[in-house]
Length: 287
Image (cartoon, rainbow, N blue to C red; front, side, top):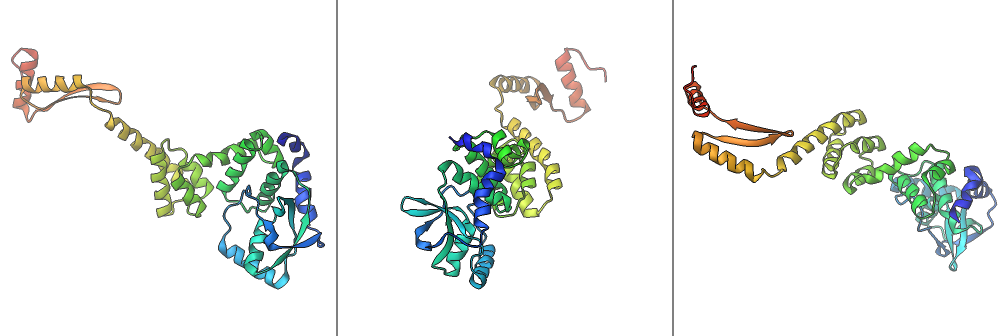
């Protein structure tokens, strides 16, 4: 069902949300108490200062663009205009102008997502979650989402990759401490722990995207070395080192460094070096 609607394209879908709600004369007004938000609304965060500004405008001029709603379960669910609805409540309005349309479940989320994307109202992560929801719950492919929103498939893929970030880093993006560019640079670090450390450093020191890209490989290298150091020493290495210490009378280490097995024998000076050479070669040293 969801995929049939995709053939309409962006212009046709937006015609329902924008062309209709742009009309100055709404179908009617509805009490705010009868209107409910769309639970699938892709935008989850509304900035207080922006809502306050819109609320002040509504107090002075009223709502110039009606909300697009549909009747559902005895109430009226918002299809487009969630931000206007929130600002109207903040302004103390009891009723709001609406246009009532019979819109299918398949198109409601797409219309809400498109409306927000057209107005650049979504954060990068809200945008990524919106794409994911279209793909997972609405049966779309990345190619279809790209066509629907007039974007390249790579743009959809790169945005969705932000959801691979740890929650701690996602929170920094949501709070505006990291940009989408920062986030993509942090994704170059392989592990979750490394991404969290780099993300926090970038936010704390207010580093640029270029600086973040430069740091990412360094966090990956230190991370790899840490993993290697944590690898347990084989028991055979430990036994060999112990026997050699007893035989040579000095500190001996048997270990693996970057995939190569190595034997380390400590000596204090030339005299001790000569003694060890004699022991190991079975001959008196000649230096």
